[in-house]
Length: 471
Image (cartoon, rainbow, N blue to C red; front, side, top):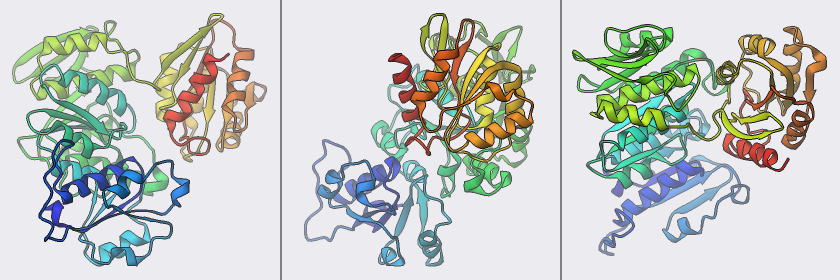
């Protein structure tokens, strides 16, 4: 795809959209990296790049002066078909649904629409190892990035994890390897995206407001391997029935991982040890107890990351060393502080009930749980069953508080042990601190998105940690 000679419209002025616009404009100007100075002969007309967002500029927390300096045209506010005039290609940010009227008009005009992830794949000169799933992506990809560094001199980690994948692809260049966290949103507008190794960790209900149904949501996940061929690998969770059956739609080599059974081939746990068997070879990595990250869900994450790294040639002895030292990621069952024998944990990354369930399973009980936020409307039955078993007090915040409270009472959780903190994390932590006594733990695991109170789960988690550290 000759990106440098196309008039490009980028929709969505968030991190991915801004990165895509800068990347396209630099290609148009003939700049391939920060030190390059080659500019096309001025007698040729340089194609233009437009970055558009439906929000007003003052409502976006970003200084757009650099983009203006590059000659990127910025268009804020109402998005009409006039934006499509002369456009050869549209790049859409993950937060923007492909069903918006402007993109429907573009499709009717046969204007190609791709995601920022697809742009990254077009630019990448090194193989991509891509990980998706409802839960565990960030931990797995962060660990995978460390594992890849044991073999490759240039490794990039990006995608849904915070650094736009197009930036990572350009930075790594040739001769390295890329670890990519991929969300269902990012897959909506992909057509040719083809990792060398893809991994699907699990599929449980999430983002149903965006996708409309569980079937569509799963289909977006499966697009990650849709273009893979016999030379590529697909790593699947054998313990998840929906994921296990994806082998029927794969055109590449499928390798399973399992926490629950011994496999003839793949990565699994046997006699409390993590094992990889592949092509007649068997390798023992470490014991479950030696893993730096704890909890059954993290055993799965470690198996998936280790197997993915092994398939691109990372030595098993080096894999073992990294598994023993990796301590996890920020906002995922992250220890914050101990006060009078009570430990506080930040699990702000738990933006759905399945992820919150995994956090609750990590502790034996006596949990003071802070939950709630931007309600995704998912079924709470399994989540509240575990709340009944392991939670002493339930503190609720945000838009979801009333529904969570109603459902909890219906599931026989004692109403007198449900406390409401409104839209104040300060109040939620204050309440938890007032009632918590050893051996209880205070756990922020919202089971909801954060957008009713914060810009993202990272801001929510850091605010929680700030408040706890100021107690």
